[in-house]
Image (cartoon, rainbow, N blue to C red; front, side):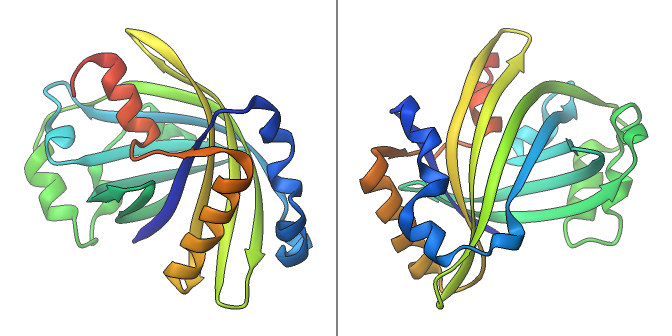
Length: 207
């Protein structure tokens, strides 16, 4: 399960201030600062079978490692996204020969297999962005606050990525929401109910 807040930045200057916010510096784990170069490729059948089931299948290069992620259904309201999520480490060859069998044994595998059957998975979009992230501990919740900057690429156009995410790792969800609200008020952040993938699908004109 993934629980996160997603915000868009209106003020380009805020991107240089958010992760050095005074409150965040007080509660962050100094050993968990991270800058990651992300290259993500999203897959579906040519008929869009996964999309129709509200399933996103992604292979993402995170610096030197590759992680294959499945996200499904869930809800998004006032920037709070709650959805199923499953992450599996993989090799770079997955991008060239993607298969749902990597999720064999999971709770959603049978649904995946029924949707895809013997159809080929093809890339539908890709993204390049840099993620700068810190881990924070309020005493009630542990979350990762990240800043993503880059580009969504589709066959029908591109879109910039400049957003802040606050993802709950453990503890109280309402506490995490309060922290996100504090940052939103300070830095004029705009709550977003759209994932990067949804924004790409809009560019493609399929939703």
